[in-house]
Length: 421
Image 1 (cartoon, rainbow, N blue to C red):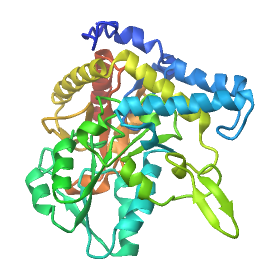
Image 2: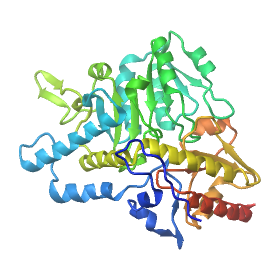
Image 3: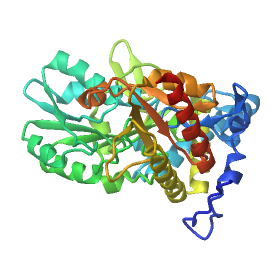
């Protein structure tokens, strides 16, 4: 049976959401794995890339490959225009007030490290407290742990309820006059929990603290408005929003970025350099973009955001919620299967364990049937340990997934479970 999505578009200018037509944009979805059609359900790790994004690389390297900002020739002008055009696309995508507040990094992980080593190193000290949610990816834990070891501030953990939702009463109680920063993801990569980041930002600000939001799992699935959230910092990565690897985004409020020292030094981030008088630094955003950036990747990220906007984030989100509901219903029919993370507000992620079957065995065997899921701790070891498990299987959905694929996944999972029990 064929399941075709027809979702009401966001505006009269957008065509109806048709998943079969949309899948034609993704060449990789046509391939087979071990003689079976690929069913790709590992989107929380990396989403697939539409052909128009793939073509950016051939176009850039074949037509206007040049370094940006520093040249006066035509190719340099064209490359610079495309690069800065992508910055403006990112600004619009997250509704940042200014493109000066958009910093390109190698990924979300580097963005966290930038904030930790620039803002954190100059604003945190012994006696201060940083709140980190139990739901965090290691990228929003480890940089702060490293810094705490050096500076002596205290890290406190915001706990979660049994369903994987943050304990907001505990969060309120943890906020004190010593709190300097709150670290929280917009959407949990391990459980799919959607956190109330706007409310959390408001509470943090009332306590005199800042908030940094990990948006890596939110940006591909829902509309992000950093002004509405009132985030001080917001980060996301290109490869989870239908773009390339090796590029990410740090948004920061201009008032904060302007007084933060550079993290890395080199070309492009300077105004003047002198042995006698030292170095003065470039204006935002270039102060934080030392050296030659990932030019083609940034341009391709801009194209990926174009693709996402053309499809429509509301339509994508609505379709993914249908997939989440359907997959949850189907998985709950399997004896011995337990879903971790059942919060009321969830993105399209289903993390589960199966009694008598190791997650790694399931992942390896289901791959032989053409189904790609993620197994392991998902860079969220504290969260999984809190729930008494070392690893889960995680199926995560994107704009191009279908109910038919879920049927194949569940049928394959039943077969694999029978093999390993």
